[in-house]
Length: 316
Image 1 (cartoon, rainbow, N blue to C red):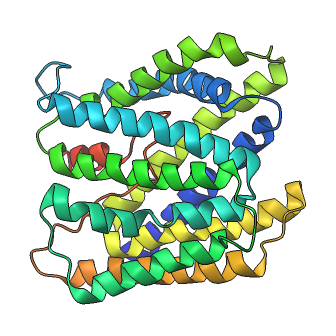
Image 2 (image 1 turned 60 degrees about the horizontal axis):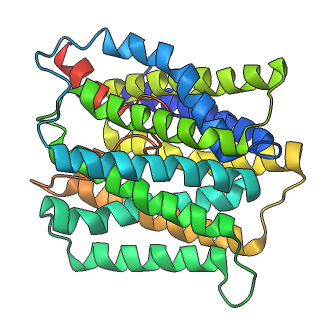
Image 3 (image 1 turned 135 degrees about the vertical axis):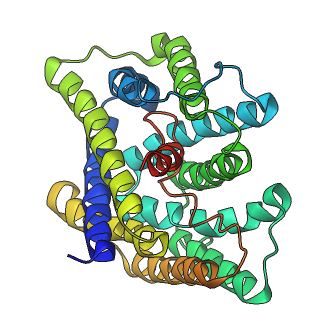
């Protein structure tokens, strides 16, 4: 099997697992606060995260080389996780994905002040068209905007900010530092807030929370394998397959059928994102912030993929 085809198939598996992860979040969100779901997701993710940490033989301490950037990334990741979990709990899956798919567009914009990237006219046009697709999904003035829509937008913005910071400091920070700080912050922040919203969990729901952690970890391993096997320009667009899973799961479990605006808006956003990815893959000397930001928006609930891509490739 051709390596790029193998990589694409592994990425499709990864994003199918991520979509299943999000379905369980939505199911649990009907009865529990996102604070409680995030807390237990992080709690169950720690043992799996240790499997990553034990492999990190990079010398150094847990003190960040760039403390202020790490603070910014950690705060952004905590906000992203809470907002994403809330959005999945209250909105149709396809709508949440459509808004989160704006992340490559936002990363392109943030790369200018943070990474010093130069964005040419064609990419600016693609960004503008893509953001207009977000407006098509949201339909301001035509449909009532809910708190969930705002949460999804905040998640996309903060997740993009956290991802760009990884591109900014990732070569100088240890992978364990990049991964551990957001997870620890999520754990302590949500633990402090948990007494305000705690609802006793039956064993079946605890099992669902554990499955969330296992699905995220397994999906991350498939995504790492995909990027190590093939080209980023082939693997990165596979994330858009989640909209198909969202439509399937929405109909199967939640009686959700994507409306016309969501379908059209998603198509606009995806087309713009694909254009940016393809342009960056052909741009000589580009830092390629979208292609090199390889996983889903940073939530601080599970191990992030991209730091371990660098390490795995060095170990080959």
